[in-house]
Length: 186
Image 1 (cartoon, rainbow, N blue to C red):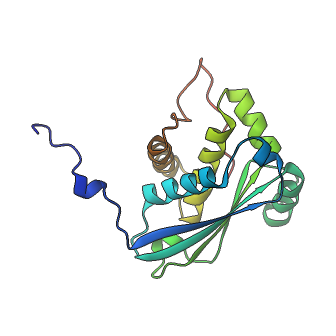
Image 2: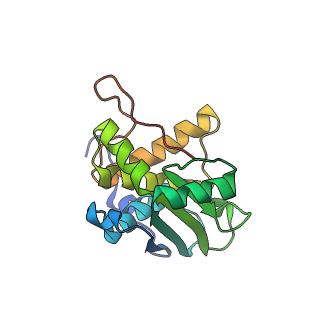
Image 3: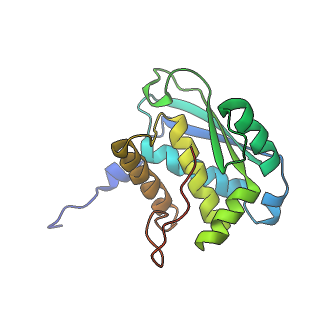
């Protein structure tokens, strides 16, 4: 090949680093919306693979699929915000997972059905694609990524794009008909 391109060796993921995903459903509307546990797990693994922690071993994450009422309570209790939101991340410990010396529980990610559905409808994005984006976004927070500063936001968005592209999902930050998709809440 004249231009090189990615080698098969670099495309193969290190089998000594793995993510186990548990999906917990507190709202059956997610199932009715055809958002499967397998799709949620694939999205979490895509985000994990994009960020790739350096320590070998098995990492774990729980994804909670809930409703706006429970998300409102979680947001009020843990962030002091008296409103629902689309996604919340709850790291398992004080150490950022991407800097951790040992693998283990990364934490939990929660998604609110009604808010996620409304955002998907408003932006013309399939609910399952938007949910996948929120899972990737939440998982990256568990791995220590943030979007408070512009350079951090650019790095996080790049990882989100990579993860979603690996799933065949369009760039959520691309402009569609002159409007940008709803901002992902931290």
